[in-house]
Length: 192
Image 1: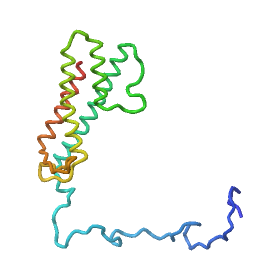
Image 2: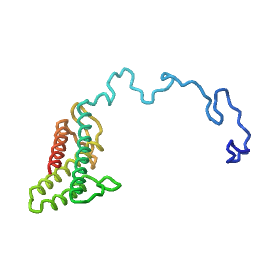
Image 3: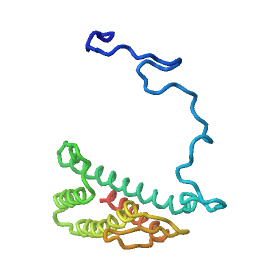
Image 4: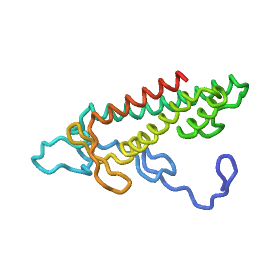
């Protein structure tokens, strides 16, 4: 036997099908079960009216984490745009990074080189970039702790685990401060 397009041979006889079951479908077609028929995978203890972990996290903490992530993305975009603008002003038309998106460290290194070529005698801009680089290295570690190490939240405190598996408590104010720092650095890069 062959299929309808005559591309493969099948030696097995056709299998009988139940009513409303597509041919070859392993399970009979039945109405979907209601949620009450489904067993709860992670039931709460009886009499427990405590909020779930997701409900216990302060919305301000979640908003601050999202703000930090978005501020980092805006900083990377602004730096890449600035590097591309400076390249074009020097006559280079290639795209920033080629296929892969470069890290913020590589973008800052290229920005430093371009500023050094543009302003050979003005060391002030290079000092500003060096200060930014130091701040960004510390902020990158903080961002990694927040994104990869977040475990729980208690009120306005985010509980994280660092690379050495040590518990670190991060206050909401610290996250907001780092986000503001990223936004300030982004504006400094735009002004170079």
